[in-house]
Length: 120
Image 1 (cartoon, rainbow, N blue to C red):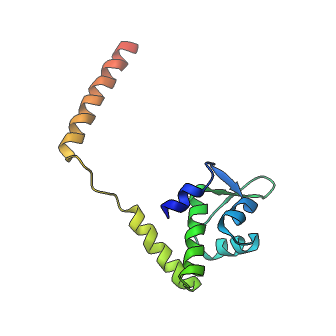
Image 2 (cartoon, rainbow, N blue to C red; image 1 turned 180 degrees about the vertical axis):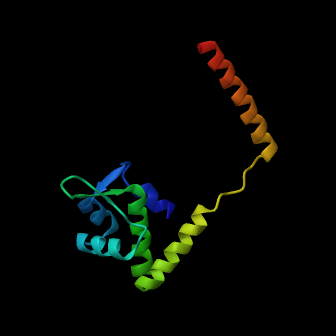
Image 3 (cartoon, rainbow, N blue to C red; image 1 turned 90 degrees about the horizontal axis):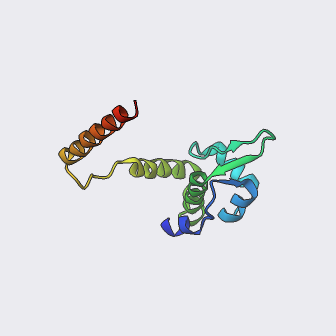
């Protein structure tokens, strides 16, 4: 998946035609997947054109991989995608102890308070 992320153009928003080309499916397939997978919710312009975020495109690439390469059903792909997203949301362990972060935050707060006093 990281290889796929590297291939995406460095843009915030993509039009449906661009996404269709990147994912390798027709635009009507993207619209259908929107109705089947809650993780894909492009915003719409005032003229009702879809604007996909980078995260949407990455999700669509995952959906295509699950449906086409791994041969999941829609329901199976939906469940697998949900489990993959749960794994991604888990917060990684912090490399430093909590005490170290607390010390840094306390020091930062003192410095901000000092700066505030100087400015007022």
